[in-house]
Image (cartoon, rainbow over all chains, first blue to last red):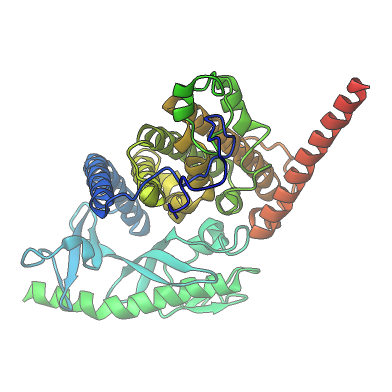
Length: 233
Length: 227
C-alpha cells in the first residue's frame, strides 16, 4: 500500500497536484499507536456515556414507575393502595430475600380499597399478537377468576385494525365482570359470563388478548391462592 | 486553510485528498437542505425514513436526534482528524457516532418518554445510518470544525424537513385528525395503508418525483434565461 510513494514517473512532484496518491504519504503507523488511539477513544466515550446514563436514570425510572402505577390504578378500578408481590423461586413474597435484583422478578400487585378490603390482583403478561408481542396488564379477582379490567401496555398491531384492542372502548370495557377462562365469539350470548365479543377486522388480535388473559389467570391463580393461604396461617 | 490553496506551499501541505472545495458557511449549511438533501437527493438514511414517518411527532423527533448526532460526531471527527490514524479511522468514527447516538437515546428517554417508546429501536439504529458515516468520512474528516458543524446542521435540517414532510402526509391521510384539527372533516375514512410500510414507499415515491420535477423546471428556466 505504501510502496509506490516516491518511485513513480511523475518527475516534477508539484504541490498543487489535484489528485495526489491518497494513501502514499502516511508511513507505517505502529500498532501500539493504533491501539492507544482506540483505547483512549473508547475510555473517553465510555466515561461520557456512563455519566449521562447516571444522570438520566432517575428520570427514566421515575417515568416507568409512574406509568406502572397508572396502569395498576386503571385495571384494578382505583384501589386505595396496593402491595407489590415478587415471584421468587415459584413463591410470591412481599420482600424478596437476599440481594437479588428485584427488577428482574415477575410482579403481582394486590389492590385494596379504603377499608382494607381486597379488590383483586394485577399482573402483566406478554404473548405474540398478530405481528409482535402484545403486553397487557390484567386486573382480576383471583379466587373466582372474575376480570376487573385490562390495559394494553405495548402492542405493534396493524394501525386502524389490530390496534382496536387498545382503542375500541366497547371491546375493552366488556371484560369487566367476565369470568376466565374466556371464549371469543362473534356475537355474544348476554347470559354467558365467559363470552367476549371479538372485533370485526381484528379477530386475531382480539383472540390474542383473550388467550393472554386466560393464560395469565391460569398461571397466577394458584400462586396468589398459595400466597393468601400462607398469610392467613 | 480554505483559501489560496493552489498558491501557498504551506496550504498545500494541509491539503487533504478529496477535500470538499472551499465554500461559504451559508453554502455549507444550505447544501444539505436543498441541492444535496440526504433523503430526496442522496437517498441516504432510507430505513428511518420509512420506519418512523407515520406520525409527525415521531418523524420530527427522529430528525432532531439525527441532527444532534450529525453535528456532534461531525465536530469531534473534525477536531480529532489529525490524531486519528488512517488505519483505524472507520472504527474511530463509528465509536464517536455510537457515543452520540447513545447520548441521544438516553436524553430522549428522559425528556420525551412517549416519543422515545414510539421510536423504539430506531434511535439506537442511527448508528447504522449511512448518512452519519458518510458525512464523517466524506466531509468532516477533511475540513475544520466550523465547516463540519455547518455541514452537520445542514444535513440534519434537510433530513428533518424530509422526514417531517413524509410524516405530515402519512399522518394526515392515514389517521385523519391532525395536530388536534379535523382538517379532512368528520366523514374522512383514514387510509390505513398510508401508515403501513406500503404507504411509506408510496409517499417517498411521490416526494422524489416532486423534487425531481421542481429540479427539472428550474433547470429549464435557467436554460431559457441563458439564451
